[in-house]
Image (cartoon, rainbow, N blue to C red; front, side, top):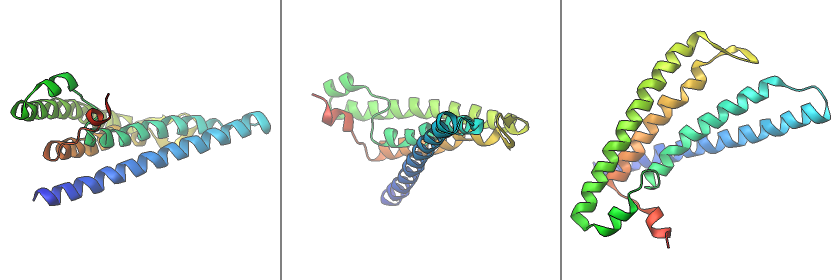
Length: 164
């Protein structure tokens, strides 16, 4: 059961990270396109600014699960270093519960914003609903919750290993 969940978690985290990298590539490409159209062709494409903003939002919310999985988001380094193995496990659960509570709030309000945004359209892209922009919050929250649980089941302390 544990191995199956960790395999599923690894797949989800890698998929989210790949999508986050794709969103970074999209935003960088659109930024270059915007520079060329604005300063070389002198005919700015106003829709690129909106897509850059929303691709960066998607990038952040899809990149967070990898940070949670690496144990690099919510950190209690000093307490963790001073504690014994039993207390470290208590800290693992406390940090996971706090992170899951935060992710739960992000999911709840993100889904609410996405549903409310269905009637709004993006400036510069009048045919596209704001639902798709706000959907980054609940989607990222789901992937983050999987990463948090994965780190609880199989803890990684990458920030502790690289600290001096």
